[in-house]
Image (tube, rainbow, N blue to C red):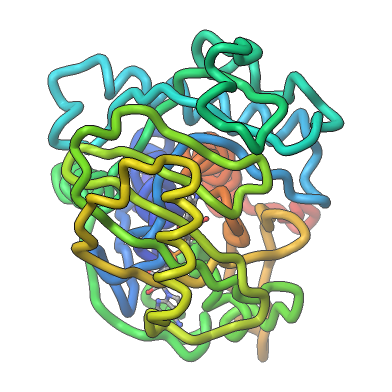
Length: 341
Ligand SMILES: Cc1cc2nc3c(=O)[nH]c(=O)nc-3n(C[C@H](O)[C@H](O)[C@H](O)COP(=O)(O)OP(=O)(O)OC[C@H]3O[C@@H](n4cnc5c(N)ncnc54)[C@H](O)[C@@H]3O)c2cc1C
């Protein structure tokens, strides 16, 4: 069996998890991750890392739910293992609160997280401006630790990591047989995709070890997420804004919004301000494409556009991407004039 040379472009949570899934699912291949940035400098490093799915208008809910469940189950197994601290994955309980009754009191993911229930009157007393709430336990992924942990898995299975910025996917031909495009926002240029654009998010990291429960306003705009070493306060959603520098006025606004929900934060000390650009698209692009140019062919699996919820679904969509890569490898090993990608 000849070795299929696979290049995974992008080293955020999508590229690294896809590479790990390929190494598990596709025998007889070599894997090289090519990326201009690695942890701690990717968008994935900025993510708060909470497992609460976001809806993509063009991705069916049943697909999203499957990806979320696969991701939850994968991370829950890590959280229950001796690897939990190294991988930066742990359980966290708390509340999602609403100023008016939401259209869906029980969201589609309610039976995936643990112990989902309506908040009691006594719990809601803590939030006088809110009339409804959901209490549940979910997982939080400290993304920088998790990305390093995934990189370690890739190296252990013989994969290589290469720092390089690509201007065009054809630069990978003839060195690679199959390309997996996990470049997030970079796909605007690399895949010529005008439907993907940035939605800027700014977050603060504070020292407030007494905060144990997460609190998320149902709008998704204001949130308090306690983690292993700090509490993340958010956030913003600024469409089409490419500015990666923290804005001091926005930081003050985030801090005061969070203090309304959790007044004890007034005593917290801000240690970091971070900005990331969410790769937003109407739906995740998970698709094979056979690029052709002057008699040359290059099979590509696109896997990008996870927007505001990439951490929540990464493992499920990575397993599906790995299956598409496996099909490309099969097609390469059994070529036929009628075989289509
Ligand atoms: C403030 C904020 C909070 C968030 N909180 C959450 C949360 O709580 N839960 C959740 O599920 N999601 C959250 N997200 C969303 C999540 O961060 C993204 O969905 C996810 O990180 C996308 O991962 P990615 O690997 O596709 O992109 P990225 O992490 O951006 O990775 C893309 C990779 O491609 C590389 N690349 C791009 N172009 C090129 C090129 N031309 N050549 C070579 N390499 C290239 C980049 O260097 C990078 O390594 C949050 C996002 C932000 C900004």
